[in-house]
Length: 340
Image (cartoon, rainbow, N blue to C red; front, top):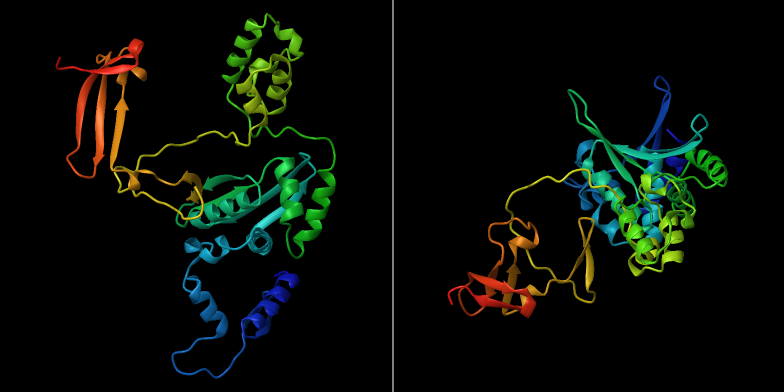
């Protein structure tokens, strides 16, 4: 057990109107801290136990752990403080001299805890990956990795680690001050190059004028579209190179069947985050009528219903809902009644 962590727990116990007694287990060569012995009224628990119970964590087992709601409501500096001490208990920071790379990860048997940590890292501008390690006869484990020098440096500077890991963190930060490495993260799909080629053709430019003879073979990082955009002056490429969206690969899409959905509105703001996804306040709950238009041939040119569209009256506060098939006349920008 890290002595610095024991000291931090002792201080925290004092802030919770409690105290900590140290036990040294010589056989196992590990110390531990526990709440002080004190007389308590019947039915009462120690202050630390009461505090954990109030957060919904007192009876949680390892695979059931999660980040308390109060942490998500905390300002970013408090979120960073929470992550700093959490990392000292289940995370690792080290420099791998063999591969010349930093290793920053956090492990747990609780997938919810890992997801919560990933969302908290996003609060402080750090992206991460999650990997799964199945285990026979026990609970599966999950590991959250922070890859790439940019995110690792941001983690070390804005979050950091507490205790003995802090020494390794400083060494890793020193190593990362070297040449900039390309971690193959935040790379756009290769099909972006088709758009660049089209613009080159329109401007009667040759590929070699971009001085990137091999770029077509790989998914582009932001620097390459940025160099291309400077020459071809394309707005879409400009937004790709300078936008704040983070490009990542969708690794799995799993259906959960039909579920109840709800219209949500958060007062005071138009956007909010739900389960890690940025959402916008719903307008449907205030609408009296919601109409949708669906054209099957817009998604499949060979659809047998070519030329038709579904006029969907999805919501009508004062009447029934219905779906009507209409003919779309795109050259006139209108839809016609199929019955006529």
